[in-house]
Length: 325
Ligand code: ACO
Image 1 (cartoon, rainbow, N blue to C red):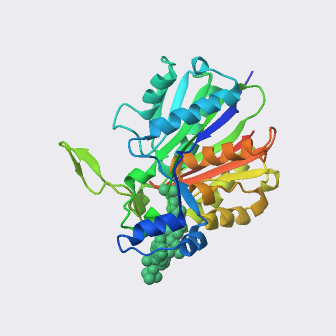
Image 2 (cartoon, rainbow, N blue to C red):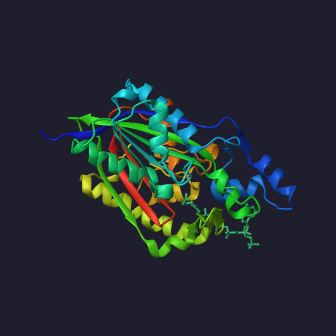
Image 3 (cartoon, rainbow, N blue to C red):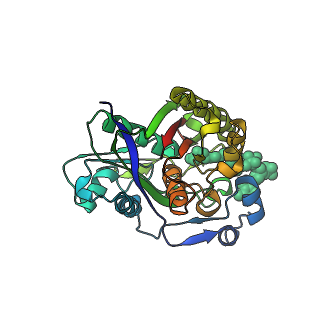
């Protein structure tokens, strides 16, 4: 009998400190850098973001999100035999965030590793975990997206520092005889790696290269609208579904214009798009599970509904998943 993987529970965690656009603008103004709430809202839809306190890392945020996802699934850490963390801001070069979170949860023994696909990371991690559950290599997988992008932002670069925030989201994926993850698709084009990157690395006891996020915003925008529509159509085709069957689109929350443009191209109205970018900013790999958990807990997303998840990020990486919740 074939088995499917299903989302058994969702959870998320945001660090308590919020920074509104006005607060961020005031902070930048002290260094002579001009920005405004009006500019940020008009170009991106972002109104505020959460920033982790000094010393708080993606493991701290990811652990909390994981605990909440387990609680909502009615499972304990001992039921988990696989942890996949999508992050570009891990606590250490190694061990992985997944190993560190496994230790915190006290569930040693199963597989634990990180996936690095930047903002598309959660789609990559979900797709990997889906393959493991369906092939019975794992039973219950924790799939976590956790990021502290505030730690790699250059606050003298107004074109990037206003866009990102910190947070974590998680799902528990487990076996079911009912369809859950219906289809997924992953892609990358390494030739585009220069348009969005954090090139610094540790070498010989020093950081070499700039350890700050750099982005050619217009190039990313152009790529994003192109690849997101295509990959969304690809998973719909794979699953033999029309976009009319999608109850909720849960896109990567980078920019409201990209999200709504893609939805419109697919014939999905804004009322069917989960939108958390105003409150969270772009939390990279955490943004989809954060948006998903917000909509589940807010009562928008209900059991049995069809969800279209899609994201694009540095690499360039992109992907989508069609999920029966
Ligand atoms: N405040 C005020 N002015 C600003 C700011 C700011 N924070 N940032 C840039 N500007 C200025 C620029 O200097 C420029 O001024 P100029 O015309 O005098 O030269 C002007 O605003 C326009 O700049 P553009 O870069 O052309 O602005 P654009 O309309 O392209 O918007 C944005 C920029 C929001 C970054 C947009 O390109 C975008 O959203 N791109 C996609 C980015 C994205 O989605 N990234 C994430 C995906 S992958 C991931 O999540 C890691």
